[in-house]
Image 1 (cartoon, one colour):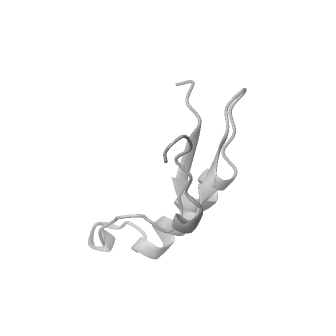
Image 2 (image 1 turned 135 degrees about the horizontal axis):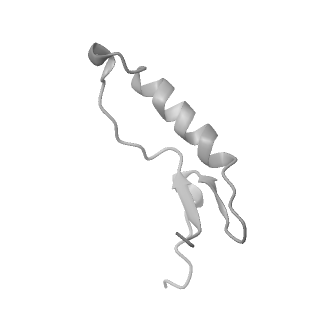
Length: 60
């Protein structure tokens, strides 16, 4: 709680759980990216970025 969050949209790991009724991995990834792209909380930032745009800030 109280943290900003950024999801790296093209760096997911997942397993195929379709045998147990789950959607296929590509749909899980698409849903997760969609959710985090529009996630908001008062006073916090959230979103997604691609790997090439990751900035850890303050590192040299």
